[in-house]
Every structure is written in structure tokens, then in C-alpha cells.
Image (cartoon, rainbow, N blue to C red; front, side, top):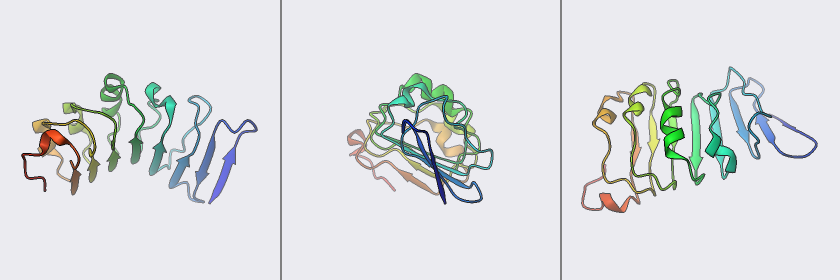
Length: 146
């Protein structure tokens, strides 16, 4: 693993030797390019996520507690067709677009601690989905969550 940063510490990137994992600790859009070999991307507490970059259409994304602008995100999600893990924990989301249907390789979807009361029917088309976490969505409290 190696770490790359700029002199002002506006971003810090961590990569495996084969380019298969990347973690950005601090990030300013436009200053960081993503490897075409990127398989996992973890982003947490990043204020610039309101300006989602289409370049982040890789396999693992975590948008935990970023206050995502839903309109931008729903447009952006259509481009994440190779994504297999999507973590939207604690983002005050209440709706999910049918664009989720484009995520054919999605295996794990974490929607916990949001405001969901329903999900789009298209979520049933996610044939590779193995784990759906809807915990702490109080509107689902009357439903059995498996």
C-alpha cells in the first residue's frame, strides 16, 4: 500500500500495489483522478460529495453521512453499473430511484438510518443482491425486515 498527498493536504489517497483499493481521506474534486483498475472506493464525511463526480463509477462506494443532494445522486447512480457495494448509511434519504435497476452487479446495499418507507419495485430485479440493510428506517418499523 502506498499513500499520496499534496503539499496542502487537501487530499490523501491510499492505494494497494495493484490499484484494486483506494481510500480518499480528504478530497477536493478535480484534484484527484481515479485509477481505471479501481475496485473499491470508500468516502466518508466528505463535504464535496454534493458535487458528485461521474468519475466515481467504480465497484465500491460509501456515501455515509455526506448529506447527499438526492437529485444529483439519482442522476449519478445510473453510471455506477459496475458497482457491487453501495453504502448510503445515515443520509436522510427517503426515496430511491428506479435507476438502482442499472446496478446489475450490486451485492450489498446499505440503506440503514435513513427515512425510507418504501422501495421501488425495480429493486427486485437486482439478481446479485445478497444483503439489503434497511435497519433504523423508522417508517419500516411495521414491516418484517429480512
